[in-house]
Structures are given as C-alpha cells and as structure tokens.
Image (cartoon, rainbow, N blue to C red; front, side, top):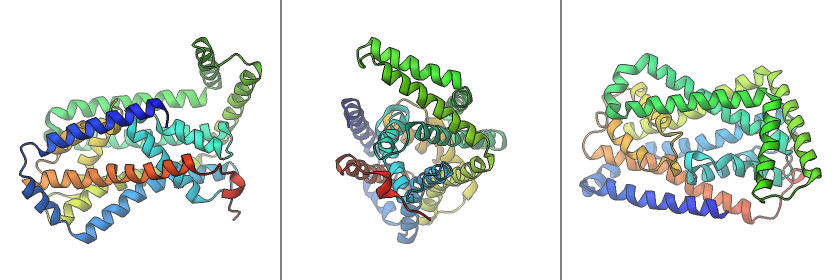
Length: 345
C-alpha cells in the first residue's frame, strides 16, 4: 500500500468515526441493538452469502472474459482480484484505486497489460452501463414515489445518474478510439517525465505504443464477439441486483412487512447510483444519511438505524475487512505466475 492509499485509508477511518458518532447521537441504542437482535439467523446468513456472492460474481466476469482471450486460469484467481479491487475502491475517493491495483496484480502474475486493461475497461463500462440502465428505468417507472422517499436527496440521485452516464460515454469513446487511447498513454508518460517521475526511455515509449496497439486488437476481438459482452452484461446485472436484494433480506429477517421487494430494491439501487461517483472513500457518511431518509417510511422506529447498521455492515464493512485480508495476502505472498494458476479444462 503506497502513501496515497494510506492517507485515503486514514480519511476513511475518520469518516467512519464521524459517521458512527452521527448514527449513535440521538438514538436509543438499547432499542437499536434489540431490533438488531430480532434479525432471524437464517436471513442474516442469507445476507452474508449474498454479500460474498456480490463480490465473487465480479471475479466470475473477469474469468469469463479472460477465457475468451485464451487465459485458462482458475476462477478463484479472478475472485481474488475482485476482492482486491473492492478493498482499494473502498478506501479511495470515487473508487479510483480499485482497477489500478487489480491491473498491478494481474501484471505481476503474468497477464499481459494490454489484455488486462481491456478486460478491466470492459468490466468498468458494463458495470456503469448496468447502473445507468437501472437508474433510467427507476427514473421513468418510479419517479414520483422515488422523489417522495428520497426527499431532498433526489437531486443527488439526478447528479449520480448524470455522472455515471457521462463516464460510460467517455469510457466507450476511449475503447473504440485507438488514436485517443494511444494519445492518453503517450501523453501520460510525457507528463510523468516532465515531473521527473519517470526517466526518458525510448524503449519504454516503444513498449507503450506496442501495448496500445495490442489493447486495440483486444477491443476489436470483444467488438466482434458481442454475445460474450451480452453474457457479461447479464451476469453484471444479476450481480448489481444481488446487493440491492440484500437489503430486502434484512427487511424480511426483522419480521417487517408492508413494503414490496420492488420498493426496497429500488430504494437501495437509488442510493448506490447517487453516491457511486462521489469523491469520498467508500461514499462514507452520505450513504448512511441517504439510507435513513430513503428508508424512513420502510423501517419503523429503531429498525431504521438497526437495518442500516446491519446492511451497511454486511455490504461494505464486512467485505472491506475480508478484502483487506486478501489484499494483504496478495502483497506479502510470493510472486505467483500464470502457470501456477492454470487449470486446463
């Protein structure tokens, strides 16, 4: 973990402390803990499995796309990369640290940088695309009820949807424009050399140009195999919906009724869309505030704070701790290779 990530982790811990202080202030914590104690163990177990399934399914998408590029590697290797990405995304603003660290470990273990870059870019575009489709669908089919639930945060939802849409357009442009991608790669190297982060090297520049060409070849491969992209989109949609469904499991596990699966999942999706692009590590603080506003009519009394603690605890903090352990193992473990991870099927 570099200095920047250590600072981000420190900011995250500070935000966690401030958030917990805000949650506990003005709440009858005895009633909150009692409400948490009413959660049925079977639903809690199902929610834990769902949270792990959510991250692992990203690894399955990696595995599927890399196999399309003739990488015969165990699924568990790519699930590992998914957890590493979750950890670094969780401690960096706007989740910017996840993919660079995934790229680093993929390259460290023998994946070509060009292939890894294309797969990571493809997964990022698909992820954002699915969020945008869900967000637009909610806006068209559920706008008035959503505005009532979100109240003042509805404008944050509009902002989140706009930013995600803009990012999808930008990433697609980079992917299908080889000149643009090559210019970004070479331009980035020039900037790093100007600030003396890198020394001048004709050999490195040539390798970057070759990598950009290989990147475009991989992009063309995926564009020519649209059915593989369609499968990845479908799996990603299931992945996204699973984390929204987790909140409904907590709702049912607390013995509550009156709100439909559709309502609970839509509200949780709207929170994700609103905070996804915000420059806060793990969208800390704002997620909890939005949750308490959005679900105020769904969870009554102490169940509101209790459900927020359990839901956020499972879909973020629990996964973050597991991901931290995986990231530490990747960092300190001996250098792996593709040959060790191969599984010829």
